[in-house]
Amino acid sequence: MAPKWRELADKLAEQIKNGDYTPGQLLPQIRDLVEAGEGSKATVHAAYKALEAEGLVTSSRGVGTMVRAQTPLKRIGISRYDKAKWRDGDEVAFIADRVASGRSYRRGEQTQSVSLVEAPAVVAEAHGLPEGARVYARARLVKEGEQPTHTLTSYYRPEHVEGTRIVDPTPGPAGRGGGFRVLYDAGYEIDHMKERIFARVATADEVKLLKLPAGEPVVELHRTTYTADGTVVEFAVGVHAASRFAWEYEFKVPDSAQGGEQQ
Image (cartoon, rainbow, N blue to C red):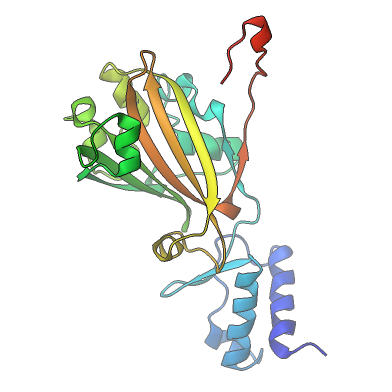
């Protein structure tokens, strides 16, 4: 016979899968289930910890236990940077992902802070600067509803962005079209990018900020953005909750023997 906490965890898991509890919805407070006769405080707590370990919910102090989105967001590749989206429209990259995923979005789901900092080694190398040189860091936390999905910090040379909306700490994208549109208007049209991604163990701060369940890894992204003449105008570091994204790429297959470009 299964222990009481396991029976309760299985019951709640079935309710989640049936849609009785939807993504982003809070499960009942522990005391409410105790009062409803579902078991002792220790039983309910153990059931919730089991659901968290199985990736069905996240728990955070002061908020409660929330049902996780079970269908990952598409993190589309090349097409999220289509110039028509941000130069001619107002669809910044995180919004392009939501549109491609058939998910809703609010511009306020991106918050940010901007500061002038000493360039970390990886940032200095990307920009061709001496380590410790001053750069602007534009740090964003992106959420889907109340659930954080990722962080993204973009680093810029001061001479490229001083006095622009990129260094304005107002929450949300940097105006219509976001940062790429700001660079475009300043005469720095983006031409090509290099992205590097790798998985790693989350730090304690990342677990707290992204509200990660125990043991979930993160996917770190390094994005270098260039103008046509090879000038680096942005180096960005993103940290993504691994289970909340599905990375999707579509591109033309190169044929270097025929003189085609190779990415």
